[in-house]
Image 1: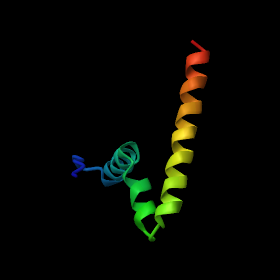
Image 2 (image 1 turned 45 degrees about the vertical axis):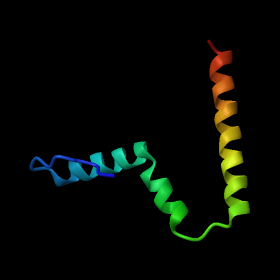
Image 3 (image 1 turned 30 degrees about the vertical axis):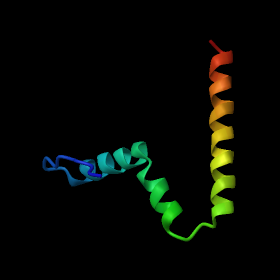
Image 4 (image 1 turned 180 degrees about the vertical axis):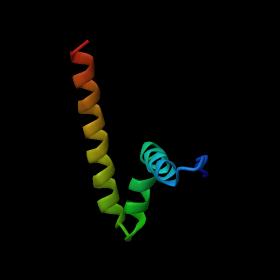
Length: 65
């Protein structure tokens, strides 16, 4: 995986762009989750909760259209 950010004289702007791209790719969340070992049962529970959250969010979007 590679995230390409062009630096054109402004390092602060390049860092901000890099952080934004990492957030959009989900890289920061992945690094945070891999910092410590997660038991398989905990991982299954977390993934089920995330799927439920996505399902609820999608149903809210469908209702408003």
